[in-house]
Structures are given as C-alpha cells and as structure tokens.
Length: 116
Image: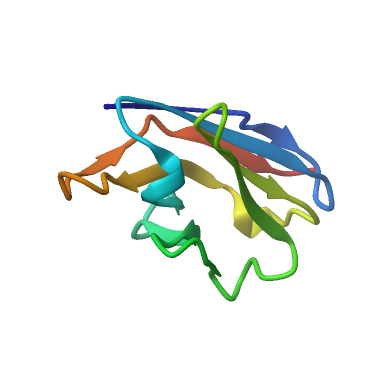
C-alpha cells in the first residue's frame, strides 16, 4: 500500500490550497481515510476524515474552512483548505485503514505554510 500526498506550499493568510492523496494497493472508497497534521512541537492531530460509513468529521478548528472529498475512480482523497490561517501551518499527512486487513497506513507528508 502506498499513499502519495501532494499539493502543499506557501500561501498567504486567507488563501487556499488543495491537498491530494493518491492511493495504490488499497481502496479508499471503502476505507476510513483521514488527513492529519503536525506542527513543530505539537502532536499529530486529525484534521478531517471519512469514516467507513462514508460520513465526514472535522476538527473544530477547521470546520467551515476545510472540506474533505474523494474521487473513487482515481482512488484519491482531497482536502480543500480555504481561509487559511498561520496556525494551519504544519506537515499534512493522509492516513487510511485498509478495510480488509485492518492495517493503518501513512502517506508522505506535504508541507503547508501560511505566512505573509
């Protein structure tokens, strides 16, 4: 199983970015899939996720600004991030738990920096 995250970068406060996480060897449409982030000195935290039931959950700090979505045909999950704030600066990771094996996998991180 491989997860490849991309789409990070440097953006000004109030700007937007869309992160992508493409998977191989597992099926996002039936897995739990989430985006996590970790800022220096902080623990990794859940940002947004799809449950196995297909519902979504968001951290309170990103509700109304971030949207998780997926393209089942491309086996890719996205995180649309709007109204970005400096406190959103972190390394963002995608994570999935394979429906059949129960194993959890982490993708490579993609850096998001929000700064003027």
